[in-house]
Amino acid sequence: MELTGKTALITGAAGGIGSAIAQRMRQAGARVAVADVSVEGIEADAHLPGDLRESAYADALPQHAADALGGLNIVVNNAGVITRGAVTETSDTDWALSLGVNVEAPFRICRAAIPIMAARGGGAIVNTASCWGLRPGPNHAVYCMTKAAIASLTQCMGMDHAHQGIRINAVCPNEVNTPMLRSGFEKRGFDPDTAVAELGRTVPLGRIAEPEDIADVVMFLASDAARYVCGALLEVNGGKPVS
Ligand code: NAD
Image 1 (cartoon, rainbow, N blue to C red):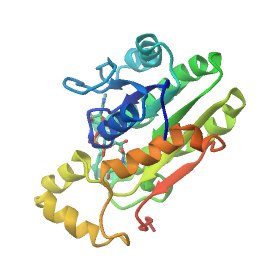
Image 2: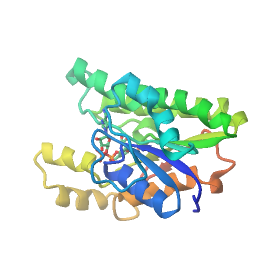
Image 3: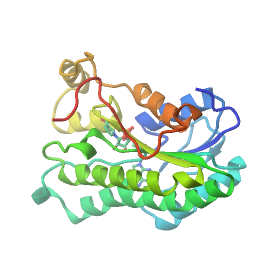
Image 4: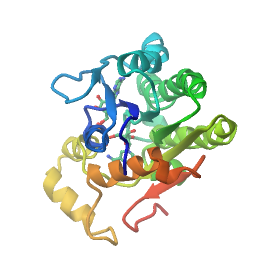
């Protein structure tokens, strides 16, 4: 997938999936702006650190990326947080954090990016939702709700902005071998390597996803190969849908 001459903003670029997306896009020829709480040491063409819970930062991010890169063709809203537990175990802090990072920040970034892209004839936005946004799993009520929200917003925006040449889609991974997943195992007292191997045996393909498996699908959705794909929620699950 060729991205030569394209410019891309990627949030959550210091994380497992985000760093794989940034690497893949640069290898494909794109100029990339990376955003995360800390972006030190990440190879990129622009570094835009900040906290996505700060509305002014999220609102300004697309313009900052466009200024730094000389345009904005691609936005990947990939940053995310996971809060665990049923609603009765969810604090106000967890609620605000989950909504703020997983829903409000992508909303703000899309709202700001769409006019910038439209003024230059179009672009592509890829949001990282989750299989759990399509069919929820147990004991992650607010996380699942935020991923359903971003999935729905993606479908709406995919319809509403196609006429401007802007394609907006979401990738919906199942389990991916990243710090987000591994930290959950650690918190519950499991060895992450053993837990990842065991979880892999529950997947028809025989392993859970690596970040690059998701990054390649994001690359497809961001590239001209997906030129007729708008508002899609693309499930990437190794044959293991959440039932
Ligand atoms: P990760 O924890 O490795 O990366 C997430 C990144 O988001 C981190 O670098 C973190 O610093 C950043 N981030 C979080 N809060 C932020 C904030 N307030 N401001 C700026 N940046 C912030 O996790 P990952 O697995 O790479 O997750 C990437 C995306 O994929 C997330 O949206 C996640 O919900 C989604 N996802 C992950 C899995 C999985 O199994 N790992 C499955 C489905 C969906």
